[in-house]
Image (cartoon, rainbow, N blue to C red):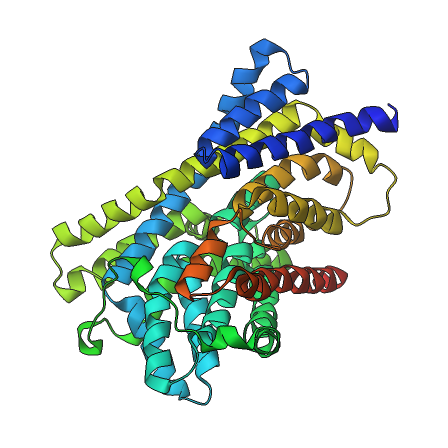
Length: 455
């Protein structure tokens, strides 16, 4: 096949992305509807047989949501239960009191990192912004001075760590061990947060000093529950409940590694450990724990606890459909032969599949806005490229995640949330939020490539 023939499907994809942007940004069409419309158009343009198109679209939706819907649902419930009981507020305020005024940024980073593991990015942001406002007011410091480290921790956990939707879905698509993704993700996430949080704040302050004088607008958050510290659960139990799914998945992975090292064959104990280390059972057990620790143990009526659970699911329903829509576009790209074209284009290329996954995810993120959709679409393009290579699948997941958070701008909801919460101009938002997301992406890639030398 000639280079031109290889490039034709990629031009179609690029055109599809442009149409998707026009539908979402110019016509204000819902993202999910736009994704399905573009999937049909791309399938037709790629010359897929008409009788196969609907099957491909339904298959993409089913395959994506089949594994992720339970994880996403349980994750949302867990975050909401911890939030509504005051557990997240307790974590934040306790760390602030322990660290003191001088090290306040580090307190915010640690609190955001712990809360960010358990909560989706948007939920964590809505929850932490009022707490950041409170601390900034008490200590008479800039809200942005604390806001940047908070956003860095939330973005890094969102991009790199299961059970967040991006890394979880991509691990499933690549067939990577989710526990290894979590362990490598933590190794990469910790130094990335330090660089993109407290250290980047120093740079941002020099770039846009005026932004650090602003107070922001908290009204856009709507109703956020605030608690007196004595009315919240204890710090230890709040942290334990928030990171319980991570503890279970990490424990199962360590046992799995020890089993391989010692050459022990499977028995009932190992099978049980493997079961509870899967994301769905780990999150289900965590939700049951949260119902007790954040509800029953605090004498909150079960009716109120279940009301929180129901509200959490309502809030993520559209997000679930959008993730499914991203899976549909991914499946159409695979079935339409785009992945094969990319594979042939890079055949004989010495470029690392890790670097390639990052580049493709970065281009799609800048084009599409959604990190999760960019990561999902990347999976469809790079899966054929991994065949016959011995690339580490967990690192492929993290490279795709790193690429998918780069350069957030006007087509990403996070850009506008950050701008409004901190009362910034467009220029200030580009110089803080957009640049911060780019730092996370590039630094994350650097650590992934470094880690690939050793694993």
